[in-house]
Image (cartoon, rainbow, N blue to C red; front, side, top):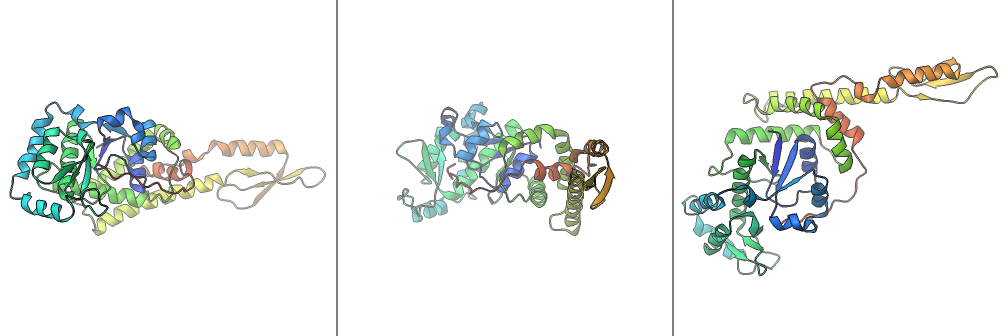
Length: 346
């Protein structure tokens, strides 16, 4: 899968998970109400920058579905099943503050009305699992129901537009939804591999990230191939010795390329002071040598310097696509700045 659909929130978090996703997937979409299209200032600052730089595509679900009510009706049918346990959810919602929705202790989740057919949220409200805000743009929805509602929407929408539903939140799977057990295992393996290879404690420059992906699209394809061969292999289980060894193999490849890059970087000529009456002494720190001293004329030094520049960082041999990850550290990191807390509305 080349594209990712983020859920359950409107704003993508300013975290390592988002950075890894931006570096790995071709396109990332987020489920966004229509009014955000007309007023981008409603986004958090980080999300607004992602959208403006076209790193994230805002997607309005009601614009994608031809028969939104028929789709949403599947969820209302689910609400009538024994598995849904409506009575227990109503009890929990009322106990946790369903009638006091503006108190800080309220346990519901805020969902925008434009993400769904209006009839669906009305039915949830009538069932005693949601309360509408005075501005009519938002509903407070019982926590478990809200989570399932967003998972349902992401699953159906993702299938429709060929985007893989994904979240940074820990959400339990439900057999009602389209996500299959095999797919969940594949996603879990993929996330573990990416987390191991791209820990990324610092934030990055988004402008540089765009250029980086454009310039290294072929490297990304090779890197994806290495990751997907592991993630899609049903014989490789999470937590198994084989899985751990496969990750180590990729890490070794990344480290090997990083070392070669550092050696290559050291292959620049540092001009020292001129010594003696008749000539100059030039210090050369070449790859594989330390403190080598070559005597000669400046023109000779320039010849050596020019020759060394032919072998640049990007000329290091690739190793299962690991050059893509090794280059990340070299080209798009920037100093750490404080993270901005995000808006947690759905």
